[in-house]
Structures are given as structure tokens and as C-alpha cells.
Length: 308
Image (tube, rainbow, N blue to C red):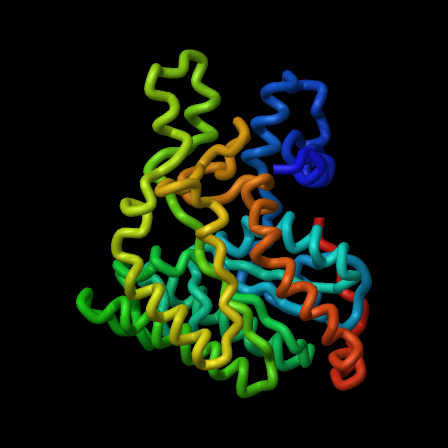
């Protein structure tokens, strides 16, 4: 991990993490708070408009791309900011926690809000005429959850198929609208929080166990997701592979060079998000090459409001 990558996001969120009072924290505490902090890109469905989305990069008006997903899209915010600035792009981002990008299959406890959020996101794509849509979520996390489809419970033995088929229908709808769809593979999860372990006053002798997870354990049950991603790629969706970037031998790293890559068991810290640069920069580079065409053919919007 390059030190500059970490410094980039440290400067971006230190004030946010400490509510503007960094002098109240020790140097170590300030570092840990920075690693734990994140940019809130969630938008409640009833407030979701194009203007309510979080801007990425510079500029205003017509967006070059939109990022849509759950908290596993949100934790990539520092990377999207970095890449959008690098390629001179204007992006927009809106997320809703525990909400998979799907129009009719969602977690039972928040079905109505999740469906409303996704329908409004689809309306925003239409309204802006954006040419690139990036979808990111904790795909595997929904496959064994209690889901509703069109308001009715999904039988457990049909959940995985229903969830992934619904995501596939959304990507097909977006492509039919003329969008290039980018589907970001979810990152490996861990049974522990490396950041919490590193903050323990007295670390146990087996502390090294909290720095990585056996790939075989982390990948258990992923076959259905892998088949889905392969099928999406065959259908013309741009699949962004991320998991291999965390692989060291036969283990997925949770810590690299003493720096936690996660802020809990499955959400990336800023350095962890920036580790995905090698996977995502080709997507942003291609979006940059399409920028002139997109601006020539799409409607011009009023400048977007920045969110705090």
C-alpha cells in the first residue's frame, strides 16, 4: 500500500471522523478513527433525487457515471473520488444499506423502502441519460437471508436463484436503456474485525490469526455467485473482479503492512478501498474515453448540490 494513498483519504475525512476536533485525539486514536470513519452516501427513498446524490470528482451537470448499491458500494467512496478526480470525471453516488440492486426482491424487514429506493435510482438513470452505471453490493450476503419477492416470502431453497435472477433483470433493463453496466464483485469477509483486534491494549499471542482468513473458508458457498458473475459477463455486463487483490497465498488479507484493510468484519477501511484501485481504474478510464460522446448526446442538467 502506498503511503500517499492513505494520506489522500486521511486528509479528506479527518475532520469528519473527529467532528473537527482532532486535537482531542492521540495520534494513535486519530489514526484508528480515520480508519473506522466512512462517508455516508445513504439516501432515504423519500428524499432521493439526482440533486440528493453524493458527487464524485469535479464538475457538475450531466454525470459521467452513477454508483448504485448498498454499504458495500458506500465503502468504495474514497476510491471513486480518487479515480474520478484522476480522469476528470463527474460521478454521482447513492446507496441504501441492506438493499440489493433489484426492483422486486429485497430483505423482508425493509422491502418497501428498498424497492422504492431502487425504482427511484432507475428513474434517476433515465432522467440523467447517464451512460455508465456501477452496481456494487454484498451479493452473497443476501442469498440465505429472509427475502420477499413482489411482497411475498421467498422459500429458502429458492432465495439465491430469486435474488440473482432479479439482479440480472435489472442489469438487462439498464443495458436496454443504453447503459454500460459495471458489476463490482464483493470483497472477502472475515469472522473478526482486524481493526478491533489491533486496538486491544494487550494483544494475545495468536494476534496473527486476526490478520487474514483462509480463502477456502471465505469462499465457501460462493459457487452460485461465481456462476452468476460469469453469466453476467457473457451477457455483456462489465464484471469487476476484486477478491484476488486481497489474496496472499491461500489466505485473504485483513491487514496489510500493519494497516487494517477493513473497519469491521466486511466493510473496507479507506486503505482497503484504495487497494481496489487496480481493479477499478480500467472502468473509470473507459468511462473517461466515453465522456465526449456522453455529453454530446445526453440532456444538460442543473448543477448538483454538494452534500456535507
